[in-house]
Image 1 (tube, rainbow, N blue to C red):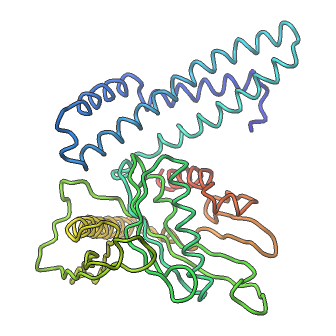
Image 2: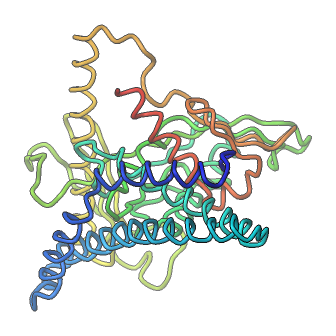
Image 3: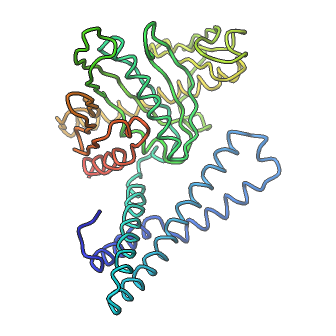
Length: 368
């Protein structure tokens, strides 16, 4: 909550809203919404489900952005009237109500300001997240599963469509790795700041002596390629294996060889998909993820070349970026941005908006 006086906060919010509106451009948004609505009304749209989902998702996102801009503009006008009434009539209740409304609008405006920073080439795309357990035995595999659940719950709060493409279960607790697809506008721009090494410190439930244990998990996020096939993968460079799905599931699990594993021979990248019911659907999804991984490699190679030419000696992105401490005290802290939360349960239940927003601002500062 801002420490500014209500009138000063109101002026501050109006200035910030004007700056955000100049970037998001309500007139352009309305024009894009009209065009997308025409596409959504086309009779044969759902013949191509991937395109239909892309159109409807973009339409929903742009409508939400425009409604937020409209809500903020009208809300600030109402708050100004309420503040004037409170001042002229010395109405403490009205002043308190106005203060509460301004605080709500400040948070909403902060979300929109964060979105204006997502201007990278691939920020507007959907994303694929890979989580891998690291050092720490059963605690690490359990931690990897906790992270998977955390991001799935975060996606629910953000209105992202999430699909678990593949899970490799550990022999003990938790998972060795997983691959999750998040489909929503700007999913990659938001989730990409979560890439890096995550550390958990807690009293181990897997240690008979109850000693404190430190474990690690790695999170990798890549942009999901569009259907224009930006990365060509010749058939001669891949090996495709089929197998039966494993792990918990319903009647369709473990009955047919529908799961697909694709190995990219030149790089050694292995991608699996077993969430679809047919082998063909799993192969299509696995190829899309493979192309996304190869695109990410290309982007990192290009970025490395740029840094080498510029003489950039800063540490690479994602070196132990966040600590989740459950004992001897409770705190989750991002080591890049210094943002922290004192209730780890909330964070593991998907309360990540503060970390994501601070990460996006931190990245924008690093690139400025």
